[in-house]
Length: 141
Image 1 (cartoon, rainbow, N blue to C red):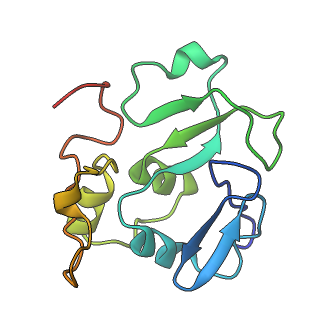
Image 2: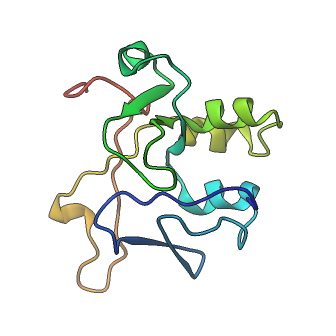
């Protein structure tokens, strides 16, 4: 990840902790190897520069979702959320993860926020994730 930069959605001071390291937007990706990041994140999206001539060309693509707001680095270049699978295909490398992990990375990362899924009374959290593909239509079940 030596040529990668982090993009963290949220306020300017927003950050993300991965394997004991804290990353913020525009931080270098070098402290962690690419093939370990995905595993540490679980279900996730990647960000890449938009390759379409305009944002409308990204609609209806189940592996790309155009990002309408500006993100660093290079806030003047349009960006897309892309699936894990597409990220590795574009990188030109064989995806280092097992088929089971790849199938999990392809699913939506939304989680039910109901109290029955949060840690309480010393019990571990029991997260419940959406079972649909990553970029499914809103409201789909």
